[in-house]
Amino acid sequence: MAQVTLTVNGKQRTAEVEPRMLLVHFLREQLMLTGTHVGCDTSQCGACTVLVDGRSAKACTLFAVQADGSEVTTIEGLADGDALHPLQDGFWEEHGLQCGYCTPGMIMSAVNLLNDNPAPSEAEIRHGLDGNFCRCTGYQHIVNAVQHAAGTASKE
Amino acid sequence: MIPSAFEYERATSVDDAIAKLAATGGTGKLIAGGHSLVPLMKLRLNEPTTLIDIARISALVGIRERDGLIEIGAGTVHHDVATSALLGAQCPVVSDTAATIGDPQVRNRGTIGGSLAHADPAADYPAMLLAVDAQIHLQGAGGPRVVAAEDFFQDLFTVDLGPDEIITAVRFAPVRAAAYAKLYQRASRFAIVGVAAALEVTDGAISAARVGLTGALSSAVRLSGVETALVGQPATAATVATAATGAGAALSDVSADLHASEAYRRAMVSVFTKRALEGALARLSA
Ligand SMILES: Cc1cc2nc3c(=O)[nH]c(=O)nc-3n(C[C@H](O)[C@H](O)[C@H](O)COP(=O)(O)OP(=O)(O)OC[C@H]3O[C@@H](n4cnc5c(N)ncnc54)[C@H](O)[C@@H]3O)c2cc1C
Ligand code: FES
Ligand code: FES
Image 1 (tube, protein in one colour):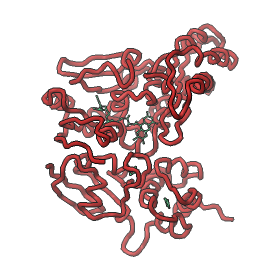
Image 2 (cartoon, helix red, strand yellow):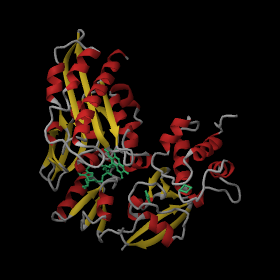
Image 3 (tube, chains in turn orange, red):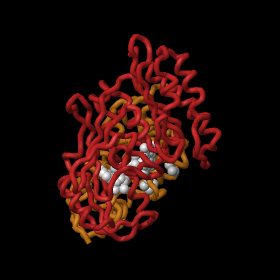
Image 4 (cartoon, chains in turn brown, blue):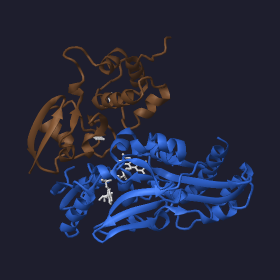
């Protein structure tokens, strides 16, 4: 067993974990933060995306011990009380989801994208979400949601 | 999918990593970004008894100029290579290549050293490092060692790297007239075919050419036939079109898989060789 201390959504959390415990399982099963999903478990789909030290990462491809000492932000850490994060608001307003399975990962990737590029073009949004799959929406409403959050939605 | 159990240690320096690796007697493995190793461990294709984490060794991270060359630390993540202002200004083929790797999450964690050590036959960096004629710097218990990229990539997942050695950096002289052209496997975004080309031009004629290929064979190789056909010729679109034409047909042991047949790969080698050379030519005038 190894001891890890992570700051998760601003709160310091210390735990004993097996080194082979994936970060996504640590978040979901130890901290009960079940907003982060497991879609493929093979590093492809992005449903497990969280921020580690401010950068998007697939939590199914990272052992919790590798993140020891890091700051982790999950979907649960975005809203400020009842006030939605602009990206959550964008997904709400633009109907950026159907089943919602991909949504937490999609939003965390979009946070990474807007941190790097606050006013992305449509092509840059699609490219910035390369690591996230959605089986439902056909992506257009997700792009609209990110544009809504960035304030770049074209007025029709 | 849960990997086999292992011990985890974090290395504080390159020497510490080498000592910790040696202490496992060949059963341990270094982990950097984990974006090749963790998937293999989940499938239990790789079951190290100990993982030695080198991701926080600061001496391994960064991109800098040194002795007229550019040095990229082995622990530098793909995102930092892709967005480097130094590379963008002096050797844009390197940042362009990094930007094609995987997706943003992969680029945030995966490192150049990990990509080279793993040597996936469809990895992007190897082709580019052949084109810029990079040197790969290694360190082991016996001291440092330098291997030319051309000698480093040997076969499928096989490179010139001892069991107790660590890649510390890659170095190369910056080349402006160089470009990378990639046919993406649409799901994984690995290269079905990837070609990097670098040209030197004197008085309008091509004086040197290096072309690296990934994705089509068991490991990355230089396309020496194409290089020979370019040297001494005028630096024009017609020259590169002629030189690229037979690039695919000249290869033996071309891979075939569910993404691309052998014949399709051969055809695409020629197409992407031409595109990479055109990209290099375009940078001559830029
Ligand atoms: C979804 C997905 C898509 C991808 N797409 C692409 C792509 O399009 N193109 C591409 O090129 N790659 C792609 N990759 C692979 C990615 O680039 C990996 O980051 C890279 O191959 C390995 O780097 P790493 O730092 O993650 O290495 P790790 O996984 O940590 O290590 C890989 C191997 O290298 C060894 N190692 C690591 N660092 C060193 C070192 N400094 N010295 C000696 N040995 C070392 C380890 O022991 C291990 O054997 C993709 C990966 C994923 C998960
Ligand atoms: S669950 Fe991690 S990428 Fe799909
Ligand atoms: S909304 Fe169902 S997978 Fe995206």
